[in-house]
Length: 558
Image (cartoon, rainbow, N blue to C red; front, top):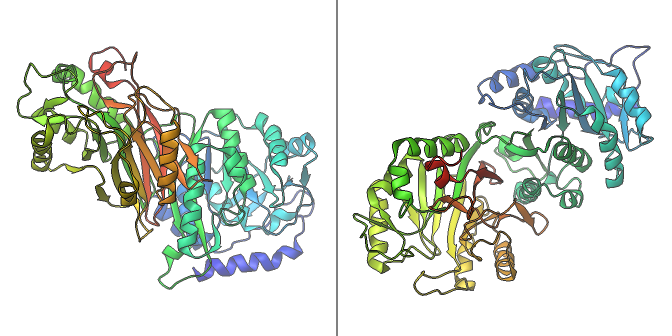
């Protein structure tokens, strides 16, 4: 740690003496100790190998987090790129214009990194906001990444772009327009950015969660409104990366690491820095990018029911295999939490009413185990369809199968997250609504903010994909109680995307729709909430679409 910090201070002190290399020469290496990079590369070799090709990655530039830099750039190794666009903050305010580039190459401890000089000249000529500059000689924002780029992508030229910390949103848009023709399928955009700065860890964690929620929503307005450096050291670089990925590749980020420098030392640090690793891919793969060490993945599903017409569909062996394959292709076998609608019974009476949801106990528990369901939420309008005795049958069956459960107002404590079950609807027979009052909502409160709280809430109007006034009022009350995310169920149709509330305080998926339920795609749809949980007490929410699994079971859809 001391060596990395010393090098950063040395870079800062030397920034006042920046000069361009003579003629067509290269910038000399800023870092001369190969061990700063070799140890991180060796560590990253043990990280999960991705099953997808990124169009962009975001990594830190503090070598305290060198393993994260290595792990992020390693995601792109062997990707067949023709060019790397490298965005980084102009730390020392050397640029006279909003953006700067260079035609000079770079020496590193692993050899030379070529600059795409032709692209640099085109970029400088395409916009009067871009200048050719000598600032690249001493800025750790680029030099901390170059050895890793040389190692993992040895023959790919780099187009360096320094982003002034004084640049504006309008200027970011001009850079996006200038870069867009160069950001094709064979271009990798590498963003060098450190996140929350100069705050104690408990405050940094809050800022990081806001950033994570805004990234989950892809909300450029909210991103542009974040504070620099409280949230990150280059909002401009993050904005350009996010917008280019969405517009050129229809790609959104998967966050694979979220750490803070406090985690690297035992003693209290008053001013910390946060680090994230993001991968962008147009494929939006389910299990394509796995969290880096220190992160865990959990999925949350919507309405789940194994009765009525779902029973024979799942008893068909071929149909059952199709369903299992479709789910596991998304989850990769990671733990799952579902909203279990109905009652588990040893024998389901044939004459049972259609809207009394009961399902065969053995079939249901076997499927919950097959899909690695860790727990079932029972805060919904069907858990009490056969009254207290039916509820006791359900909880007894889950207990015997070793599957957790949590009902109205209960908290499910899992590693890295607390889920709280809430329902605004009473039993199907009573048709009660508006059940969530201050007392139930207060179940979300926690003294220790080191573990994020997620509200798993049953609410809203059937088949509606957008929250109405009641749901927005409840969401605001949940935000005030400090939840990191809200995941909804009941409408049977999945809402379009993650939304952020309160400037990133909360990530909300209003409705996950159906998971396993006997309604075809003409009536229902579904999605999973992918939660990536990080050791520093933050999480990243991603909505992953599902095929209609009832149709899949019947061979009508894949």
